[in-house]
Amino acid sequence: MSRRIAVNLLWCVPGVGGSEEYLVRQLLGLAEIEHDYDIEVFAPLGFSQRQPRVASLYKVHEATNDCSRRAVRIWLEHTWLAKKTRGYSLVHHGGGTLPRRGNTTTLLTIHDIQWIDYPHYVSPVKLRYLQRVVPSSVRRASRIAVPSRFVADSLTKAFGTKTKSIGIVRHGLETDLNTSATDESVLRAKFSLGDGPVLVFPAITHPHKNHLFLLQLLVNAGGAWADPSLRVVFAGSEGSHHEHVMAFIKAHNLSSRVVMPGRVSSEDRNGLLKMADAMVFPSEYEGFGAPVIEAMLMGAPVICSDRASLPGVVGDAGLVLPLTSDAWTNALDTVRARRAELVALGHSRSQLFTAPLSASDLVEQYRIALDGRR
Image (cartoon, rainbow, N blue to C red; front, top):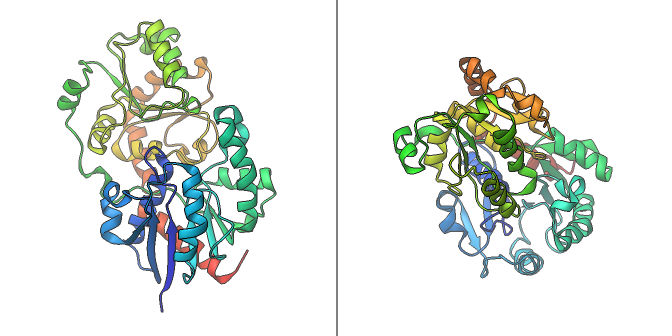
């Protein structure tokens, strides 16, 4: 007899980005593997329209509100969700916090605890909320799922969480992710990229993503970074540091070399990665860093920082460098010289991070949580 699993995605509102993608890809993977669970999704109003593939595979219960306000989402978790999921075997809370009311057999996904290492990157109101709610959620969860060993170790360090209470559910890419990509000629015309080399940085303009580090390389590093035909595509939506990024670009006359199309379609992202000399990712903090795996799958050599989870995710399949200008000065020359090798290593590495494998990890965590093992 199958057991009913409720997946709480009420926190999945437009703008949450990678955390929503992580859970959605797990759901897509669950549809590709055999398991004994009957999965149903509980989500904000409008979720099915934004995620039609999920809606085609699962019964989606939409709330009567879009949950754009945190207070409303919390209230719905303690009322509507608690009532609706009373008879389920387990509730999987995907947003990093656990309501105090409702089904007590739970799997809690925690994407990261960046707010502990970088509290100044979080608004005071949100920081107080996280400081109050996350430690309690960690203590009360039947089981905790995280995307990387780095996050698991961070929880143990921050909260004393027992290692045996935490399971790693890798990020996984959709099986058909690389089946559609915009042609290079179309992209060069669409984004005014000229005929020169292209770098891609797919990230929202939040401060920890470190856009200013790349901009400073364009100004100061010399060599390949100073090539006037080089174009750097910042493919991501506007974050809390966007005005600072734009001000730097204006102050240093970089508008002709830095392209900011906002968040691009999956087809354009794939095409940009296929044509890129490299995908550059100087982030200060990532719980996983899915863009580096996407780049590897699409054939873009990866240059990334040595911070947080990135060294463990990338391994030897890319250039993993300290966040110093000296370390990055010759990086473009290195990836060009090693391109064939890095592309092959990256493609092989990406096969360790597929949606079915991620779903298999998740099923194992459901089993452990339901068996009552902590």
